[in-house]
Image 1 (cartoon, helix red, strand yellow):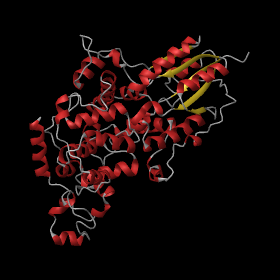
Image 2: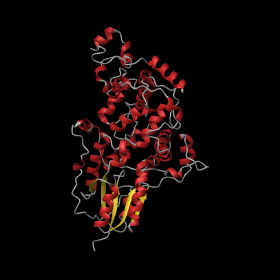
Image 3: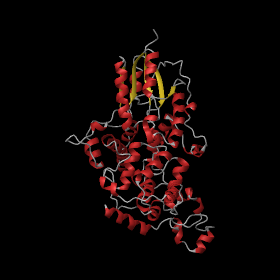
Image 4: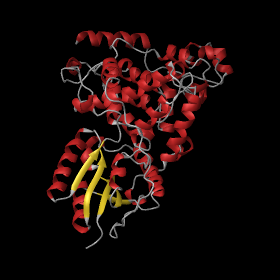
Length: 469
């Protein structure tokens, strides 16, 4: 009989350090490390283009860390796992949990099927600080407001585990019939628009560790105030690494706690808390990605002007701070959080589009496209979610730009056609005198669009629409 092995099924845990399922898998037997690309279960939320690009490079990095021993498969996950169990002498299958609704259902069926064959199947928490069922109100119901969720729930629950070291010795098994390469998964686009992303990112577990170290040494200082200014270095940019599991939230939490107590540190920890809150909402309200949590918004009179939507998507609205954010998204696969709120408010409230149009665009363009975070955040900005911003809170992109990009460094980077404008008119070029525009070599409507809507008129329209429901 062939040698007994365990399978470690990599998913959104593409790392060796603090990987509880992998650490358990290597304890007693040789391990077959596998990745299965199965897009069918996700339906409309299968990986977007930017996420597929990141996944390709993340798998390459993981395979290198595994000395080329990662076995890659594509197709129905349960069928592939059962085929491996039938062909190889598999004693156990280990994986770390994911929390998308279809994965929860699918994982339960897979676990039942594997166990029915007499093979051990175990899942672990490798991607959250607290399991959703561990943070509940005293009456056993889930929190719907962030502050009590974090302060009363999370911070009074048992603390997150100490990160687990990478296994110091792994004996890897092989599957002689595994012939698929990472390249053969076809994750990269045929038209190589992804080349513009490459200068902005280093991908993989090692890069994530280095980014965390740099942030805790310098970026965390001044975080409380600086995180609102997109030109400042006070954001970690760890979200894509977190989403794909190249680093765990436990590692980030532990690194932050090792620093001196400060308002900056506490605000950063609360941002990790918001990620936990989003996953709790998705777990208890699985309709979060496609249904308003506040049902009254089902009656909202949304707009459906495809031309307006396209102006927003490509960063040609005539409002420089909005356009800078949308172009940053397209060029880098990322957008600063303050700017995400501004462009989201502009789409939902000034342009009057249903938040799902924004959620879907972000899903395709964001490298950190996480179902829980994306859905919860779009419902938050739209006023229809749990603990949402009031609908009448409408961000003015002109004043937001003036306040949070006062020197124009961020906006000029992504809207270079306005670079020569003085700061006074950078965020409101339609108000610039003709001689100022001429001196900057700008003709509105030719070099840069005129505003596609009027802020005051659309604000009043939005408030009237809200009043109608």
